[in-house]
Amino acid sequence: MAIEVIATKRVLEGTGASRRLRRAGQTPAVVYGAGKEAVSITLDHNTMYYALKTEAFHNEVLDLVIDGQKEQVKVAAFQNHPFKQLVLHIDFARV
Image (cartoon, rainbow, N blue to C red; front, side):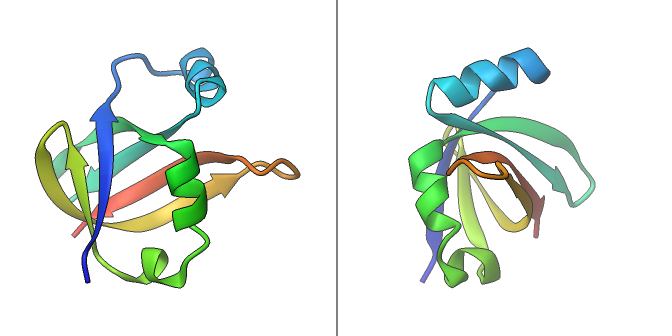
């Protein structure tokens, strides 16, 4: 069973841009590894919040679709807010 995650590239980076994304219901993330350059992306927050609660999301190879291009990735790390139900950032590693 392949889990598919939909993402879009982001052009604005930095603390202020990430705050604006989070207020708009998005989660900033990055994809790196496999000898390719790192790509900054955005994901839907609610989708990621509930997906991170499942064990399969952490253990399986995911199909990450970035603006129509599919890559295989695994969740490398993620950050949650200390007391709010908020995913702050996710790192994906290419397989």
